[in-house]
Image 1: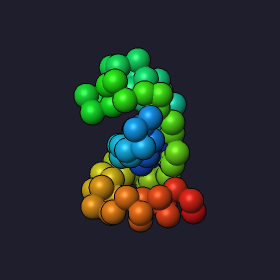
Image 2: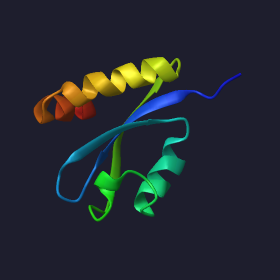
Image 3: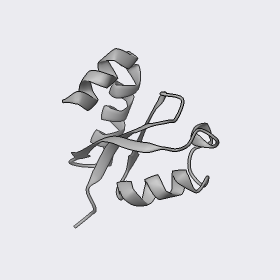
Image 4: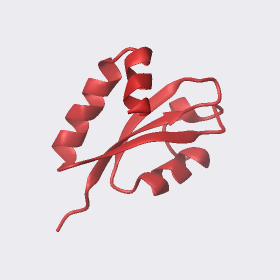
Length: 82
């Protein structure tokens, strides 16, 4: 059985939001915090995981990531708030 994929959002110290996908969100957050993840997040710490949603497969996670990235910051904040 394959691992579940997740879509996640990270809030940076400057208030910006980063959206990504991973099978192990905590491991990926640790990579980002150590500077081994996305270049966008380097130097923007501390980083805070603010949203994570499991998805049925990698394709669904990528589609949801693309959908979230198209949202305005206000809509992303509403998604985070639930």
